[in-house]
Amino acid sequence: VQLQASGGGLVQAGGSLRLSCVASGSAFGIAIMGWGRQAPGKQREFITTVTPGGTTSYADSVKGRFTISRDNAKNTVYLQMNSLKPEDTAVYYCYARAGGRGYWGQGTLVTVSS
Image (tube, rainbow, N blue to C red; front, top):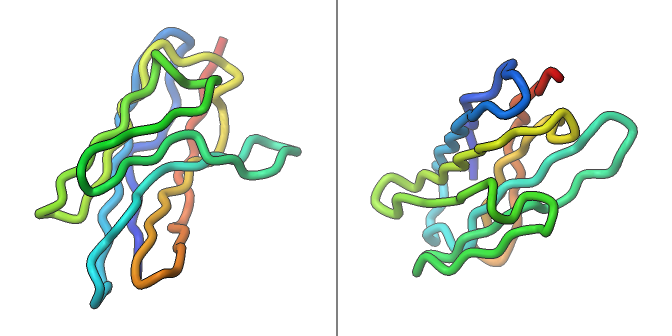
């Protein structure tokens, strides 16, 4: 499974960004999709997931500010990020589970300036 993410960039604190990620290459269909992030000097962490039926979960650090959604027909997952804070600065990674295995895409850098 290949995951291609896009949409990162530089934004001021309080601003918004929208990330997208397209999954391809799965013979089994895509199950859970989500996003993780890795800040400088820290471990990668899951921040949000969405099931094919639309059930979502969020880490406390992003709850109420970030919204995950997906288009099953396009195998695409989105992350709408609002009220961004400097501590949201990180490389954001798309995640997908298919055929009983988990896959991470290449990261996209999000930088939030104060």
